[in-house]
Length: 460
Ligand code: GCO
Ligand code: MG
Image (tube, rainbow, N blue to C red; front, side):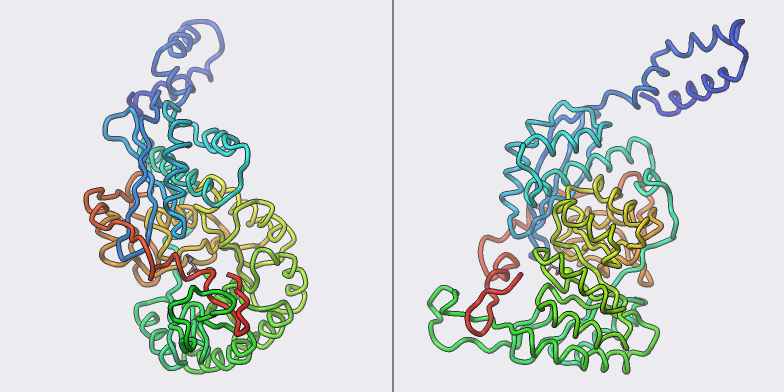
């Protein structure tokens, strides 16, 4: 199938329709519409089918990533998707290999939306992170294939650029205010206008900064549990410390830079209100995830009390979790992890919905979203009016080598690779050289092990 032929036949047919019916023009129109090129053009650009689906587990830079390769009946035409659920990578692999793959082989690659909807129904029970990540792997790969077939970068298929690049945020963390300040300056020198700042709460296990929690005395050989807590977290000292930290950051880094912070769900409702009010003078770009998704209703109360911008959403799976927050204007930034909700197809609906409610996108983009995922969300960001910020500052060396064509970050902007599809190809041989690690100490085991002093496990 030749795209140029198809387009030509369409434009000839389009031109013919302007001519009065009957006579030689009508005959020409009839001839055109019975031609195979015309038939193919109106039915889609050709009968390309899913030939195979492969799951690739790889851990460059020791981060477990799950990548999906969709192979087609068109020789050499493949698509790459991200299905990373780093904490449960093997379960996602099973969902793809044993369930989605047999369901989808033979399907027409053109039918992205129907493939999403029917895959969603195919397990009857649905909405969970494993199945959605598996679906995302296929979904992003199919968008990649569509871009390659169209000969266009993905952002073109999503509406075309409304900006030249996506403003990114740099992560600065440290054990002390000074260390974070120095790291933030490094980011600013590299051109980042947005910096996420995280500091350890002295004496406690903290999210996003090196722990300063002292090891619990004795019982080292025992499993961590309520009677043997090790990484200790208490929210009160953190809530007392954070405004002082922001006072330091704002006064030393200046007025211009946008500052962000991730609470990582670790405070109560009243603490969040106290914190957000106390932080108002420092004008955060956003404060992220004050609550776990289980406490979504808290946003109704927090929202009324503060002008600190709120970001939420990396743990969301379903529309029941995010639609109410968006439509009731309870947050400023939606921070969904796009593979967690099933990929680019649902993400573009979220982006469109959010635009109408003044909510900007800040898709979750940590190291455990592969460059394929970053490239797919970048395409959406370049084409969405209500884009806010992109998490990340580029990819480490090993990761870039496995993910050939990972988007580049220049002067604080992530830029699209001007290639058809999302632009990233996976070097499978190299990926195999970074097998996913089996046991601790790893990403997998840092959750469900942080506890309060009395042994109560915290969220998350
Ligand atoms: C962020 C996050 C991450 C998550 C991680 C979990 O905002 O970047 O909160 O760092 O903790 O992706 O695997
Ligand atoms: Mg977060």
